[in-house]
Image 1 (spheres, helix red, strand yellow):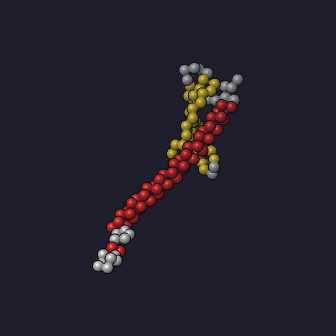
Image 2: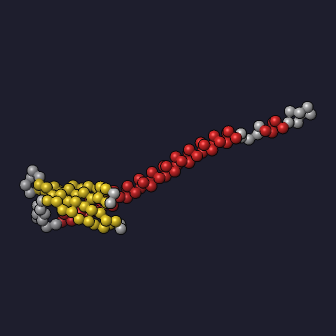
Image 3: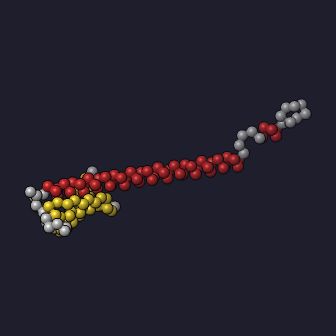
Length: 129
């Protein structure tokens, strides 16, 4: 303070942030922004996985329904490809016997280009009544 009671130059220099304080604030802000970007990317990847599982499940359910309404079914493995939502889905259907002679276990696995998307298992009789 000056002799006449008015603030000196030193008092005005203390107003606001220092350079170090600004750098620390920017560093904290950038870390928070990076965390939010990472979270956003993870949400996008999760949504894609959910979509793949849902569409694969639809293909597996459709195969299971086709198997259940077929007049007859034999044991063995069959493969095929079904398009859905503009994507090809490869499925494998394995029919095996059970302890009950007239009952069959049908296991369906559905894959897309990136790997397994869904599985379903149903049981049915060898021939429909």
